[in-house]
Image (cartoon, rainbow, N blue to C red; front, top):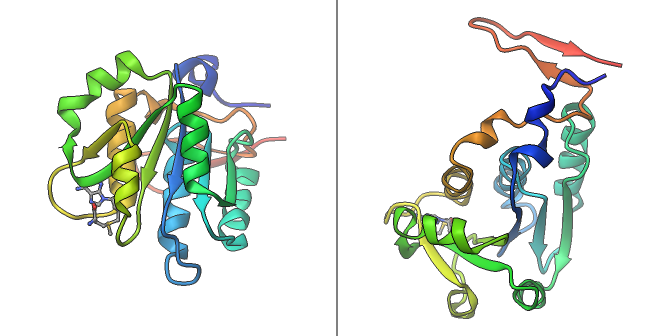
Length: 192
Ligand code: SAM
């Protein structure tokens, strides 16, 4: 049994497919940040996270545990993927490749172009230094403000601008637990 209103279903609120490519993950050191990138991707309407060049089962395990309780079973984490090969595949099927970087163009300047042009989107976020080739291959290098902050915040704000806030209504029909919003305390209902 789902407690979601039908119109808050992912298929109804999202009108394009978004994927996230995480570059530069260092197992151990970046585990928490990359898990948060994956959590934002899932909660804010992306379909999958691609983890470049390395395997890290701790990320896949954490996200599976979240999905098991809170739903979103369609969301996938693929690790050890070839980033340039993935970008090539997306470009071949005419998806837009969007790299989030403080050096890019302001999100407010490009977002209407993106929403009118891009049916499928690969969003790239980095860790430390991102190689020049990713700037060159991207259709858009996009800044969420021109100060350094974090891949987690950059991704969340970009997705919020893309979806114009409707992602906050996302409700997963396959969840076991649902939060009942409350002014104080925690109210959670278990179903099934
Ligand atoms: N020098 C980096 C840069 O190019 O944005 C900052 C490194 S930051 C620790 C890691 C990642 O966070 C970056 O690769 C980028 O994806 C994202 N990021 C940080 N600040 C950002 C900003 N102002 N706009 C867009 N993305 C940002």
